[in-house]
Structures are given as C-alpha cells and as structure tokens.
Length: 241
Image (cartoon, rainbow, N blue to C red; front, top):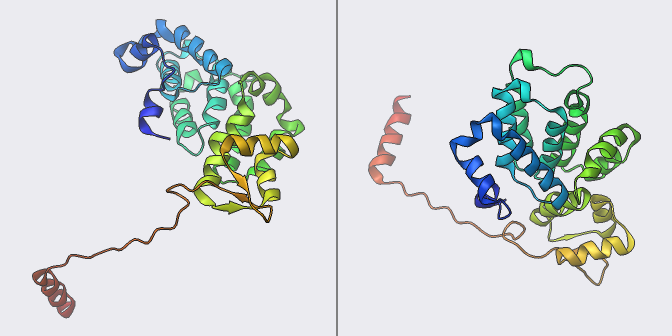
C-alpha cells in the first residue's frame, strides 16, 4: 500500500483531514465526528487508518470516552489492511491505555480480541483456508453477526486487498483448486473474481497471475567498490588478529 494512500485516502473530506492532520485531533469534542466517519467507512467500503488511530488516541487520553464497540469496528477494518502494520498499530495504542481505563467484564473489545488477533495471525501468515474455516465457525458467529456483517464488502475486501495482493506478489501461476481454497470461492463467483482481478486460465487449467514487479525474477548484479588502501587495512588487521 502506497504511503500517500495510507496517510490520506482520496475519500477523506476536508473536515476530517483538518482534524487528523492538525492539533484538533487531540480535542475530545471531536471524537463523535471521527466515530461517525468510522461508520461511514464501514457502510461505504472505505478505509482511513490515521483517522481511526486518532479515535484510539483520544480514548487513550480521555478514558471516559472509551467505546468498546467502536474499538472492535476499528480492528475489523484494520484486518482488511493486512499485512500492513495497521492492526498492530491499533493494538499498541489500546495497550497503552491507563490501568484504570481497562474495560470491565462484558466489554466487546475484551471478548473479541483473541478472535481478532487469531484472524490477523492467520492472514499475516498466509493460512488462508484456515482463516475462512475459523471465520465461518460457530465460535466466530457472534463477532461475525454483530460486527463484521456491518462492514460493507468485508469478505471481498479480504479477498482482493489481502489474499489476492499476497498471491500476486508470490506466484506467476497457481493451481485452480488451491486458489479456490485461498479465496473461499467456487463456480461463477470464483470466475467473477478472476475477471475482476484480471487473472486468466491457461490451457492446463491453471491460473495465470498478471506480471508485476514482485512476481518477476530479475537478476541483480552487486558490485563491491573497494579501494586498494581499504583492502590493505583489512589484510593488515587480519595478520595482527
């Protein structure tokens, strides 16, 4: 993900930009504006990491503003940016909250954090079939039904922005069945995703990944520029060692 896109998404409004980039991000009176912006991201499939981090920073400085539901939503959105460090950045701010501000029992953040961390681990380590299995399990139903389902296009975003990006940077060709397990798609849905990604099927039924700088093998020639006086010092040092 490009740094410019990460710091200032094209969908960020001037009002939000002023809050995020200026000193107003530390004003607790602006927390509701940033929370509303988070829900806009959820409903419209947008993502603004810095704006969401600003919410967590306000919670850190003002524990009375803490909202566990908002925190869970921020972490769910951060999953869609894997393997970028967004998820861990959010956790770092949450772990620095004062002791007296630790959530009480029943807080959704405490309840769902282990599942969210497991999701992140599976995505980060490219265990995609296991991710879908755990994601669709009964144990994840409460998180899925109460939070993830509120995020527009979550599953397709995981497929396109996480899994497909990792696959495209690793493979030039991949087996159809293997990719189906990675994307958790079959049939017409799988074909539609291939078309969206611009990938094709070869004569042997394998999936051909569009060439890009990450999946092309390029020879690199390294030239060491060592001057004779430097070499003499190294030899002399080796003799005296």
